[in-house]
Image (tube, rainbow, N blue to C red):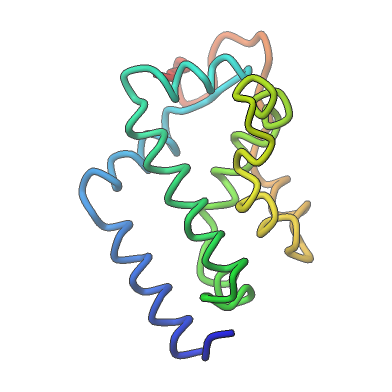
Length: 147
């Protein structure tokens, strides 16, 4: 276990990484444009022209979750200081079982899932994010863009 100071220091370093210009663009794309409706949409994003953005966002939050699970960052402090990771998980959660099978990777996104599902208010926090609208043409933010 780390001290509160060490946890705070690592959280600030993670925050500093989020300010890196390419990661900032990737996070904006994920938040504003990435609206998968199927596991195939996720695969297309992870392999298409926005692959780097997809991988930057998902691996950043998976890495942060791993630090939490291994005690490098206090779990409650992490939950109190962040919210974006919940949105990232909420976008992918409906497709995780299928993605894990398609990728032959049963641990895909497992660390972030563990961190989120351990939060006492996990379901309430996840409910703040809309579920994918299967078969609908567009979202209120404009046309769906996945890649």
